Amino acid sequence: MTTPATRRAQKAPASSERADLEPTALYTAGVWAWARLACAELFDHAESRNVFGVVNFALSLAGIFRLRAPSLRHSLVQRHVMIDRLLDESGCAQILELAAGLSPRGARVSANPDVVYVEVDRSTLFERKRALLRRSEQGRVVLARPNLRFVAGDLTELELDSVAPPASGPLCVIAEGLCMYLDADSLQRLAAQVHALLRARGGSFLFDLVPAIEQPKSGLLGRALGWLMRIVTRGGAFVRDERKRNDIAAALRAVGFSSVDLYEPKSAPVGWQLPHLDRRTQQLVFAAHVALPALVLATPGVPQ
Image (cartoon, rainbow, N blue to C red; front, side, top):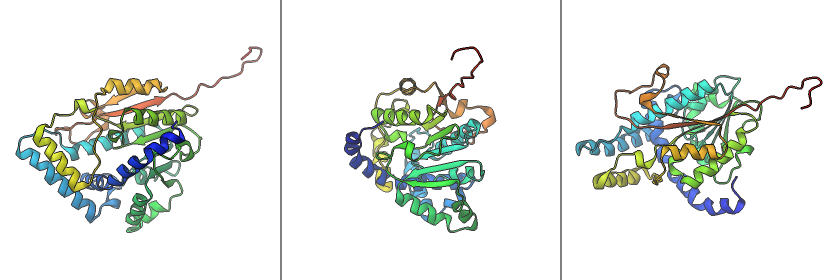
């Protein structure tokens, strides 16, 4: 858990960074709508389509100069679907999604009244999300669901146990599109908070993170294009360090997760029916698990 002093030290830069990430939320909303994911049409609007078009144009310049970069939009669709599949297979009826943005996942999953779905993000993001949902009858139905909750707050200040669904069963914590902005220490602190939530109830922590050392070397032109994309989207910079996937998995085990599974599009279970397997993509999803606490059954005459 972070200390008050640590949170104060982190607050200013992290809050500023999150403010810069709204265009990223707009781009991903454009991706979800383009891919026709369930409930994505509820968040489709002109601004997200504009950002989607501008970013794709910037990325197309890489194709002109034969940079063999993975397709961003196809990769993001696969990332979202992989996390969806893992969530569905987890059987968890309590879900906490961090930095949820304009993701349609909560709208989709909360159609099941037995599920409690809590999204966490900034208040300005949720103001926009509510406004988009109010445009349609289906969106208003989603807004009215008591089992879908929007909790506004800065992740550097929130204690996760204060916003998580009640401890009535296994919990799934999702952090899609967040961890590439966290350095090793920040990710370790987040993982420790999540593990503390899951320790008494069991569940999973799902997040995506392609280690920087596994990503294609962009060269001078690639860096220039990255700079251009940050200008047109006002997006934050990804953390680049020497962590390997095994280092990240080991760090998760070090804070107490009982097992860690890694998933990539090309090796994902066939039954997931991932789209765009014919495209050049790159994604890596981590699923860190805490087993259900063992039940101790009293046996007459046997001391416990």
